[in-house]
Length: 166
Image (cartoon, rainbow, N blue to C red; front, side, top):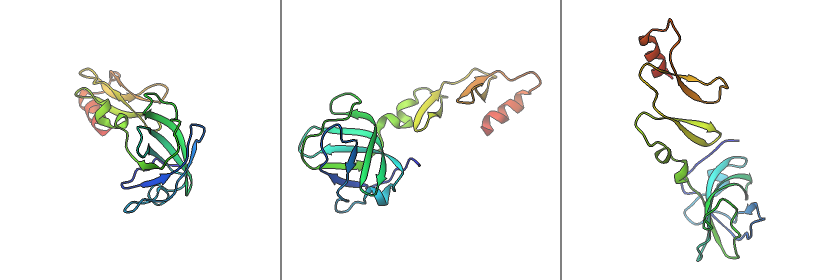
């Protein structure tokens, strides 16, 4: 369905291992809301799992497949320093909604004039500043923006107006 983010979504779980791609959630912690009420069944969200009292953690993208099951879809970062599922040991884990730093615009925009767009679902990308006189268009595959020199007949004022409208 949709990517949903929400504040104060925090539950516990006692699921273990790496083969456990679907985590059983045990309910909202006091003062927080459940994934079901904050994210909604069928929706995707960014999550963190942290095994209390250990250095085990994982940040990823997951889908709430039922009111109490979070499917770990994509691992973004973890305590092992890679993108594989963490082999969580026994114990109580905090499972909460987060927004990974690597997905923020601040982490991908590095130069003045960059244009930020989605290169795939939930994947931010940037297009560097074009040259003077160029206009923003869509590439021939219709998959990303690109800079182009306006075709003959287009006036500079028209090209600037179109670039601003995009």
